[in-house]
Length: 402
Image (tube, rainbow, N blue to C red; front, side, top):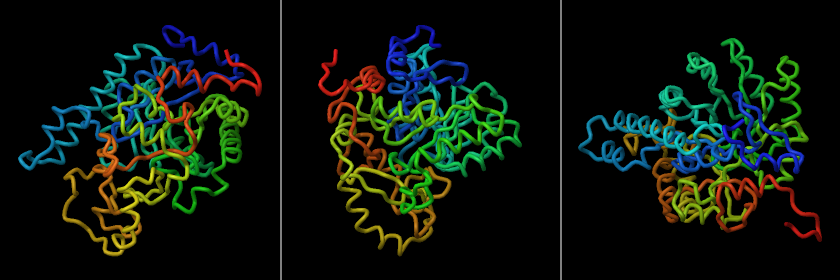
């Protein structure tokens, strides 16, 4: 349990919800998803953990929250800019972990989300582990080698993000050979989640094989057959907005849910107020799926830049060719459609576009968002108010809420 149990735990019994058991802690069954660039940094993650839930820092390009590190790693005068950027981001990650810990003390659980597709994946894993993170959450690719990278840290929870039973089976078998199994598994539904999605192609995101009522029981059966029943929590992610959603998913066999977009619409979120406004005021018919520069399907708000890009995407892909160097001298992705001239992939600099969104530039930014109306509509709330709302069942029709 948290050092000082949050009153929010009292709501679980009233709502008929089970707490999440992970890494030796008893937690609220709501996980805050990692969101980059810089959207979920220390303030959001630490505030969520302080309430007795799992807060997640996104590792991607965190230097953007640290002016001194930006100064050290940008500009033509900086020698070996790529190495300077990597070093700055690792120092930024260490700072963010410590600042989040200062906020939550011993409450909840602190995690770092690291994309398998980024080039500094291994370095970020090592930094997070060395600075005492409670859990590592890895998506955007299969983290088959994660047990090796974390072999000296057996108490750190390893949590892959997957979308179907086939992916779970493959990863589980690979990890077992390394004498490790997942400490929990995030099951992300690509038809509802925001950002990069766990499907091979945009056309696949609505495939019925990803439906929670298919995947969760199948993965639960796999875990039971592996002799680990009750020991590997399943965390359902994508489109979760209400207490009734959590109740339904727990009835299917999930132990908890992960939410990203609702946490953006909180005062504590680390993004610019305009970022929060764009996501809070957007509806599902303003969202679009497309192929990211990482080669993965993605979902975002159709802002002016994205509308313009999609109008030119076919032409840009047809003339794609290998570049001499990364636009940002960063090489943030291990494989990049723009840098590597991959014709079927996105043809834009994702770091530039996500950084523009972080600072609230609506005309130039890429604003990832999941589907579904938010719990407080277009209004912002505190992290505590959000958790109270999603852990409280709606009042019966005609009843007066108290």
